[in-house]
Image 1 (spheres, helix red, strand yellow):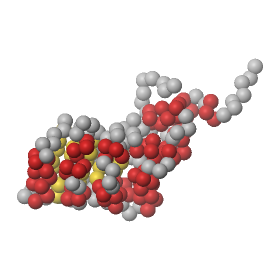
Image 2 (tube, one colour; image 1 turned 180 degrees about the vertical axis):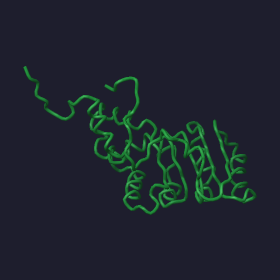
Image 3 (tube, helix red, strand yellow; image 1 turned 120 degrees about the vertical axis):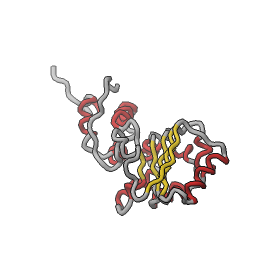
Image 4 (cartoon, one colour; image 1 turned 180 degrees about the horizontal axis):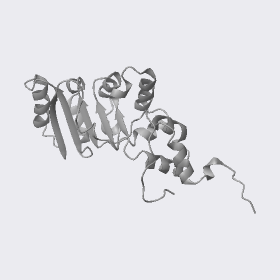
Length: 209
């Protein structure tokens, strides 16, 4: 006796994962987030450590629009993705500025945030106490990349901000760089996905049910 498939939701996980691999994370979450628990679990397996890199929106209106919707969190897809974000890079773009100027704390906006990379102009725009004190119990990695020269006042202001407020995290890096954010651990974080690019199928040992 032949079985008639009544809905696309009855497709096996392998077919769903193949289908998902053709979409960028932003489009993937916009299309499928909140459909049901099974699909949400598959989304999480495709994007285990979401990254919000604010440099992605520079000079790209579509990308800026996507990231701004994500920050606003007014839709199911944006709320779901925002609550899963593991890493954020602030680098002085419009989206970066919008994030820094929001009245909500990062701990409220991004409850899963564990790594924070700050470079360029963003280092001069943030308020150390306002940004980091609410993250004391959840954030693990802090990485600053400040412009040269090393005797720049911004370098000492950042370091003094941490010591004055007795802020300490599992891993803290304060780099001095001139030019772009090059050869840092962020660039070597290759297993993290880009919000605007398609990605390969996840390598997992177990099937998501």
